[in-house]
Amino acid sequence: MCKNLFKKQRDKRKYPRHPVEIAIDYKISGESSGKKDFTQNISYGGLCFQTQSFIAPGTQLTLSFPS
Image 1 (cartoon, helix red, strand yellow):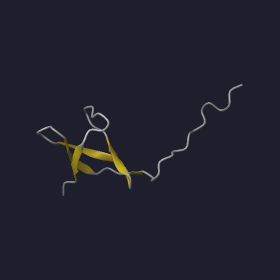
Image 2 (spheres, rainbow, N blue to C red; image 1 turned 135 degrees about the vertical axis):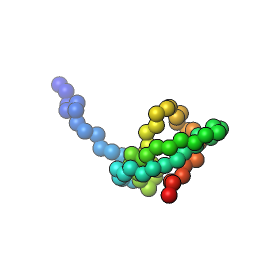
Image 3 (cartoon, helix red, strand yellow; image 1 turned 120 degrees about the vertical axis):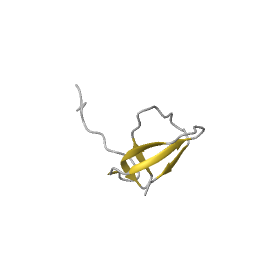
Image 4 (cartoon, rainbow, N blue to C red; image 1 turned 180 degrees about the vertical axis):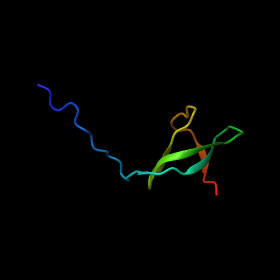
């Protein structure tokens, strides 16, 4: 017998995420040119943004928020 296979799992993040779209500039370590994008959400522990190209986990980035 199945026990609620579709039960929604709780988010176990330490800090709540807040959906917000903020412009960011970022540069991947070792590359000469930077890129621009927008955040999807942000929290005390970090931020999330989506890119057009793959960035491997652990890659060092330099982020800035343009004024």
